[in-house]
Image (cartoon, rainbow, N blue to C red; front, side):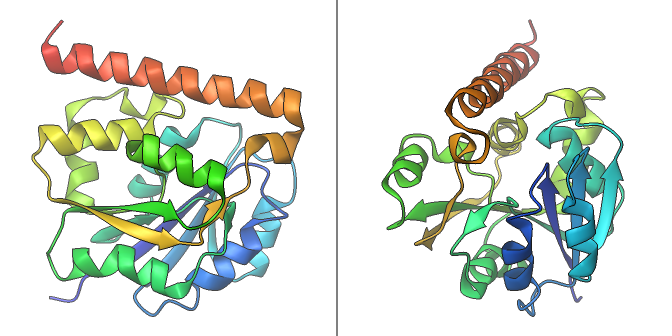
Length: 222
């Protein structure tokens, strides 16, 4: 049976960067449909996405990456979900294909893209914590099982990567890491300036830690 691949790109104030990502994904013949989840942006992210000919799901206020992804899953149809960040740099069609193909060929239930041979700072971060990579391919049934397991799962802020990593262990998923040569992303300090960027990063890390603790307590039955 032919499997449908849907690409979900959560985005918050990414009007300057999202077009470059969309131009690459649109060229990938393995992707059937692209959705940008505009997470309460106050810039022209949604307009740029629409001009690129992709579908846009708009959230009235910023809810965080976890909510945006699960909202996207609930409001789209596809056997395979491809997650990509909106601020990727040097993304290539073959990178997108390499994240998808193992799922289409049933060699994995989840793929995780890892930056390599690109910017030192982003490469190092992913070598230290590959479980935080937001570039992933996941079979839809995985998301459905996660949503069935916890009603509040969408509200864990920026913890989507931790959620997927922890449930991959819980469900004994076949997980395959995929190198993404020369790919990186624009750091928050570059987007917002050092102070605001650092504050946003700390908020993100706080959500990740809280999400991990929350999931661990739930898993341990505490």
